[in-house]
Image (cartoon, rainbow, N blue to C red; front, side, top):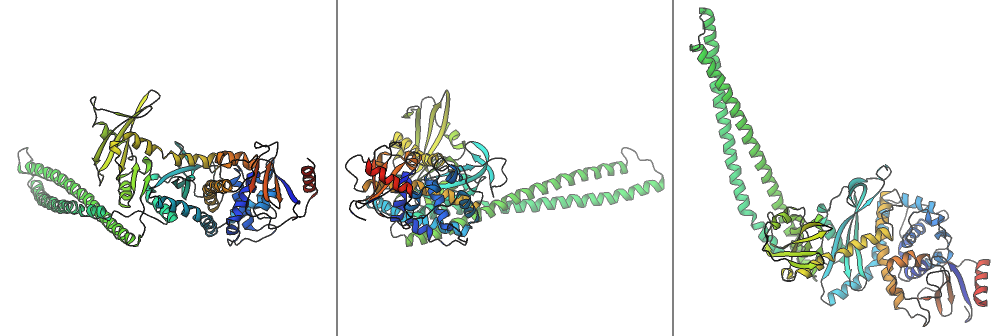
Length: 596
């Protein structure tokens, strides 16, 4: 290319061009296009259509058909295709067919390619946090993805709680990392039917996050060993109760047998006396032997009935205790297996990290809190249900001093408080606040070394900072339209979920990459000042000229765009992998650019 020569294209999706350059330079395009898919290639490779699906998500496409039927169709934008290393894009119908044909194995391979692309960025952020000896702050949540309640075409969809309603759909378990560089990074996302509840997913969320991080805290095996040892007296007491109930059951059986034997004896006697009275034609009088014998048989029958009930009651108690023994033994065995696993994990943990998990009340059962404690995390959560809050309310009265922690919130806290059923003492607090004219109460709990009871405003603020993951969920639905399922195959639905999370990370990395490059001194577009929402909803649909010359590659936004007159330099790959022949439209754009 000569010094004064330049190539000019026009795009209606400027930021998609910039992100394509980033994706190619960092190896994302190669990673996705190298995934083996069993589908045949007609006009477009199936890998190209998977990549097109990702680009559509990055562009905030609401419906899959918008790829081809929007005001400015993505599949007609040659500049975007070249930026992503593709000669052309497929029609949305072809993308739909490819996605519907993907198997779980193929989707996992695609997700693996996304994770491999993400790993260097995640590793750099982790290295920075570890080097600075800062705690890793993880937030977990379960978010609903509803579909039409009348739909029958979504596989394995189920009714569950979504957005404070019972709706048909799916649940996605997500974990995010608080990042100083990027604000928030998604670590993991798992796919579940809509009837999945938070309380069953705490361990799965933690293990998914640790798998992505490649790091974990030092397991608190000392606490777990002590917890197991405390089961000894409980088990002994339960065994004593079991033995007493077995003896009681046997006693009840023996007494029933005695009553039954007496009844049988008196029935035989009654039959003999009745026969004697008939043969002798004797009259039965109220105080006669026959009348008294009938009363005795009636009393024996009543006694047999009551003693049979006593046997059934004894057997019910025994069965309940036997079930509790089995449950306890299984619980102890599970804890011993956990201890064995944790001991092995500690032996192989060469670089334990300081990390905390923040979860909402749906995850706050005592089993989950105990598990997170034993896994080594600083734990910030709310207790599951309202029983704990009710118990704490009984600890306060009119003389209790409340601490203001927010505009309309106050707290009272206790250190080393052990709620009923919890294996470990916790820092507990009750907060009260007004929503409108209604006074509400809720409980907070914490385990770890942070002196939260001495600084209630910081505790309140830090826990509520988990709104960062709620903002991320909102972003995934309002910017990347995760809640608008674009496919009907379950593997493809999972792929959409993971691509929406990946897209949020990808744009943050791309923003940093663009901002670090040398930009023209005048009229430079400052991408750092653009949030994710504006980049997707405005930048990804802005018209611009894509200019390639000897100085590199640039985006010059048109006067009809929101960034009129601004310029953005695109470093890295400066020429398309498959250059199409120049069209009359390209020639006209070049002529007008040179003329004016």
